Structures are given as C-alpha cells and as structure tokens.
Length: 168
Image 1: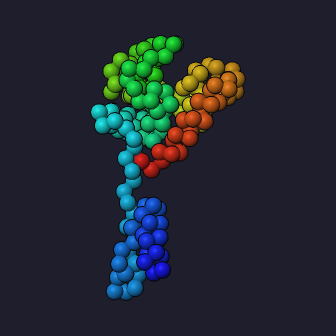
Image 2: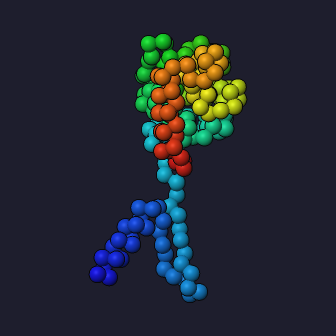
Image 3: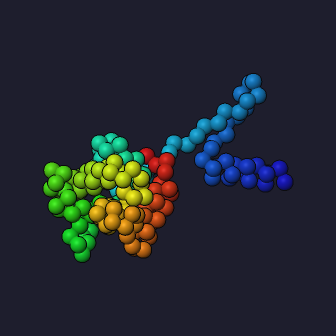
C-alpha cells in the first residue's frame, strides 16, 4: 500500500511538471520547476520565429499559433488568394514591409510585422487576428469578425495560442 502511494505521488509530481527534492535539514522541501517546453516548431524555422518575436514584441507562442493555423508551418503553402508561406503573407504585403514572402525567414518576419501593425491598429488580439484573416477594412466595416469563417479562425488561433503558452 505504501509502495502504491509512492508511485501515485511520483506520477502526480511528474505530470504536473514539478520535481520534489529531498527534505533539507531545516525540514522544508526544495521544489524545482521543469523548464518551459519548447514550442513545437521545426528547428530550421526556430531562428526565424525567435527573431520575428524579438523584432515585433509578439509572444513566440502567438506567432507559432498563427503559423499552425495558417499553413501548418509549411513554407510551400499557398492560398487561393495568393498568400504564401508559413504565415500566409500576400506578396504585396511583404513588399510594402520591404520583405520577400517567398523566403521562410522573411515570410515569418513579414507576417509578424504585419500582425504587429494590426495589433497596434486595433488594440485587441481578437480584432487583429480577424484582420489578419479577413483584412483590416472588412473588420472595420463589420465592427469585428466579418464572417463565421473568421470567427472560427480567431477561435482556432486563440486555442492554439493557449495550448502553446509557456513554450520557449
């Protein structure tokens, strides 16, 4: 019975991300936290995402969430409207930002800079994400997400962002 309690205790501590050490001479237990988990991001793109996050002050988990919903982090992705790459940037948007949407590293930076502009313009992550998906004019005209598809997009990015919070 004592063995079973020990196994349950260890399993619970391991699954919570906490490792409990031995009691110190003063009786207090030392608790060590595991480091934040890495964002599920192919290593070949990690540097581009980290640079874009630093450049725009957008949390890395949010950028990864947008990329997962937009393209499943696939640089070869193309939309029917001409958006391309990991963050599905229109070539005209990238050009306006002085970047090239066809390169993975500049695609991520262009998408992040565009999202930063939208965050600054709308002052809300939900509205900025809606504008990223449907365009800022459509969001302004509708006073929010202009369609059910955009509502679903914002919900999907937000859910992915929540699941990635704390990743580094």
